[in-house]
Amino acid sequence: MTISIDDSINKEILEKTFERKPTFKINPIILNRWSPRSMTGEELDEDTIMSLFEAARWAPSSFNNQPWRFIYAKRNTKYWDKLFFLLAEPNKIWAKNAALLVVVISNKNFEYNGKFSITHQYDAGAAWENLALEATTRGLVAHGMQGFDYEKTRENLEIPEDFDVMAMMAIGKRGLKENLPPNLQEKENPTDRKPLNEIVMEGSFKRK
Image 1 (cartoon, one colour):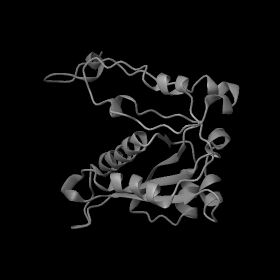
Image 2: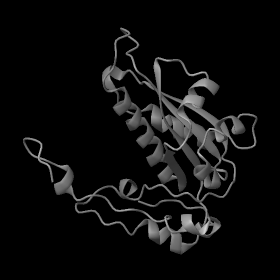
Image 3: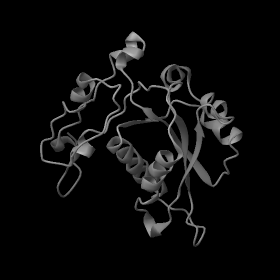
Image 4: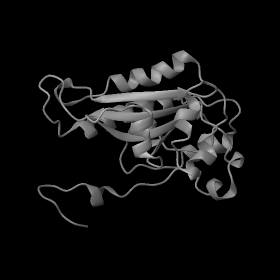
């Protein structure tokens, strides 16, 4: 499966994305989804943006409740600063070059009966992953963050109490790691994962 990468990204960066080695064969899109920080600052067209949200729309959820909601701001619009200034200072350093900032929220209750949905966060996570994988197929960065002010986000974006503020994400066209400060360049590589025998247990819980 081919992943399209913008022409401004050199071959070395593309090859680094493929350094990961799975223990068992999986779809390369899953393997090569990761969270770079370097972005070019270029804007994304409306169709591309909506295609990312379209991918999220088709995620599974309990009782098909679809609890996820996305509040976004495109760069160079009147909404950008409203979301950008919610970020923690370390995230502002690199997220300033994103094309899109998104706040992910999730309805805590089922719409059909108003009762609490114990899986609403799990469901919202599935929607985020759909979006992130769609971004990967397009050669885009989709970097999730918890480094922002949750209380100000609820207040400034007028988010009702029956929704949890889950996370933010920065989305944009991939940039060269050399565009980042030296301390962030060191982190601009795909990370490995715990081995299966630490996360998969047959029959009952076993602490590793």
